[in-house]
Length: 367
Image (cartoon, rainbow, N blue to C red; front, side):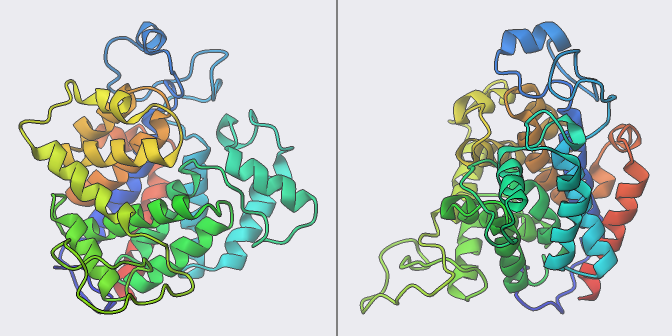
């Protein structure tokens, strides 16, 4: 297995995969800007036709109205803010990240949904804003929103620390808890980031990936409590090890990716067309809808970035999160060179974001 806790590991092509993951996330988010949050799929097709194949602007009166094709939702804006902090500080600096949120986001919103960069501020950020306005310090403003808001920004931390899994787990968990304290959300967010790290290390996205993630739990690199043995049977005889402080109660979030990859590669399990994975796993924003759909599409189209992200977008609902999470996973598989140039060229601030991705990838390689 390529992934190690040892930061000295060198993996050919890591820098291009890291850049591909970050640009893939930005591209997935921006592709969904126009058709974002259509839960009526007939209305989606009426406004955008039978197949969305590129960047589109939102219709008047819709979410993000007034933004041009290729622009980002607030998720892309927050990912860029996190990347800038990582690049300028040389790694994760929690105080710097919190200061940027206070000064660049919270100073310019009032707590209403339809405002802020990208034209909409998510529930978890609104809840943190309200508590900050009441004077609570960072570390005491996280809430129980069950969306993927944290995952959409901490995937930058997964790239930065992909070669050092304990540091990845530490930074991802700490940054997630600043806005989302539900342990299930935290476990699923860390599981996604750990999977992204394995793909960046060159591992295939197949049914065996969950066993590799479980091995990282047993090595102590990932903070999950488990009594499951290597063969996924019962644990060896003897007393169960007590759960340590900071451990998630169950490693089941790590098993989802392998199960979905198995389904995606099983000829007896077909979702046709693939965008209907959004209907199978659910259109809403919650983590338990978004991660399974992203895993299915990323595993099914592991070497085809365009098909993966476009099926994620065309599924409707919370397609920005679905396409962003899918785009990062497949971008990590195919690397920057596997992303069609038209998606990079049409992305707003694409050159600046690529420069940030290169800086963070270079820092990850030097760590």
